[in-house]
Length: 475
Picture 1 (cartoon, rainbow, N blue to C red):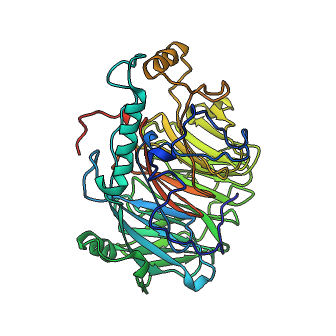
Picture 2 (cartoon, one colour; picture 1 turned 90 degrees about the vertical axis):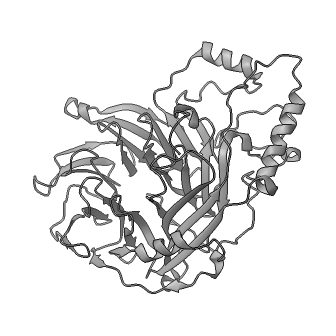
């Protein structure tokens, strides 16, 4: 259940983040053939350092806030349902983990001018021995350097802060009404907020205010419910506007039903079926009365709110705490789970009656899984973050194809020999953040992921994720 960054030191704000290689120049790139480095397996020799290859990304930006954030959520906007053209603009909400309870706040963010470029995975012309590889590499590096130094401007981020008593354990925005957000506080209360005025102000404002100068607004929540203990599990229903679940460390789950636009009826009789802390909750993407839960007891439970307060099904999912779950919204029979032992599994819920629902199990990560989420655009793709400081992207439809690998190496003159034990489903590995906590795909910008860690946020778009998208998608 590794999940807290409470009372960390205040982050220092930098104008540029170079440790991720966001603004890498040609002089910073390795002059020797690259090799695959595996965290937790390979060790850095004296004098060696890891370097990010910016050409692996269509876009990569990093920034930090005054205090670290354990949880955030992307806010749906009206800028377009499917956006593929740079620059991008996004909105999200995030809660702080400050040293003193009274110093905490919820930030409402607008990040604009997110620049990038769509890169080709394969050269447009076959590579031959006569090709001037050094010249091509130099041109590419110059383009990358220019993106931050004149060709493209750095992202502009604007912030509105709302005071929040206590650290924010988790925060979620309602899908149907994105200005309505729910927050879990470490003091044991769940609050619902209306951030419409702040979002409207950000949408109509010019990007001239420094986020460091942003004042804190004192705003009363729309509604508050006190649990018997603090908690982390929180999820809005994707099918019923205003319907909410909250789960706490006393293994209680409460159902919230909206009684009006600003009020909720919270069932004081909890759902009880776990023997330890409820770590995460997910509503079914297709059944409005069905939800799933995971717990530090190692189990996953499936519930129907019409059938009493006990689970309709429960099964052992991992040999350690189950920290996070994600219900696939494009393939509703699939549920992903991540554990404290670093493993994550894919469960086919159609197989529950047969006793074993696991259809895929991965032991790649070396530390607890902290976040897992299916792609909203590709049914077989999911992203995972871990306490081993890796964010990985997986495509479960991939299988090892030696003939295809040989063809790829021939076209690119690829010099990297990947270790044989790397899973063929592993699509991408992102590093450079310390103590990763949560990630989310952007539902309206295919291929974009935002992640939070102890040292701030990253916005990334791996270049090999875009290949699954139609080239003529609407912007």
